[in-house]
Structures are given as C-alpha cells and as structure tokens.
Image 1 (cartoon, rainbow, N blue to C red):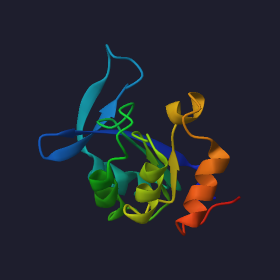
Image 2 (cartoon, rainbow, N blue to C red; image 1 turned 45 degrees about the horizontal axis):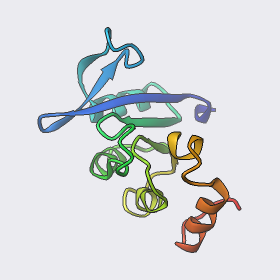
Image 3 (tube, rainbow, N blue to C red; image 1 turned 90 degrees about the horizontal axis):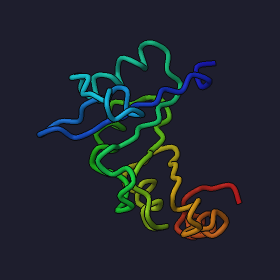
Length: 135
C-alpha cells in the first residue's frame, strides 16, 4: 500500500516561507528548489506518498525543539502521516511536537546517540503526558 512509500523532505525557512531544499547531504550541491514546502507536500501526496518525513533544517542539530510552526502549517495540508525531524533536545520537545503540532511520529538522533535521553524513559514520560506510545 501507499504507506510503503515514504517521502523525505528537507525544508528551510527563507524570508516568510518554507522552501524545499535539494541535495542536502552535500554542502557543495545543496540548493533551494524554489518550491514551497506546502506545495511539494500536496504534490507528493497526489503522486501516492503514504508518509512524509519533514526535516526542518532550521532546527536540525540545534536541539532547541522541533519547528512547531512549520509542522502545524504542513499538518494543515497533509492527509498522510507526518513524521517530524530536526530539533529534539529534551523530552518536553517530544511532548510538544505531539500535543501541539499533532504529528504522527517524531525522530531524533543525537539525543539518543549521546545518551541524553533514554528511549524507555522518553516512552514513560510521553505515556504520563497522555500521548499514546508502545511501552
């Protein structure tokens, strides 16, 4: 089914809009596609995307929280599961991305690799906050 097709989108705020960036794994080639993130989200859904991973580049690696404003904006035009990426620094950041932005899932790397947050502790924290998790 369509849930097997997961689209990764790298998005950065430029002036007053979020834009899709290409080739973000290579600093020499990375560039603004000039597409708005909202337009691209609509298009990939029309093409059959079953889930979208949105990497909010302005927050990525900052560990100051997910880009809640962008995620809310994208959630408004997204009819498939939206997975937040970029910005997690605390358990409260995860709570907010679910309770405020309403995403289906969230991912992080450095807070787990550096052992700043233990996954079982995060799951218990989210469960206590009323967010559905598998314990």
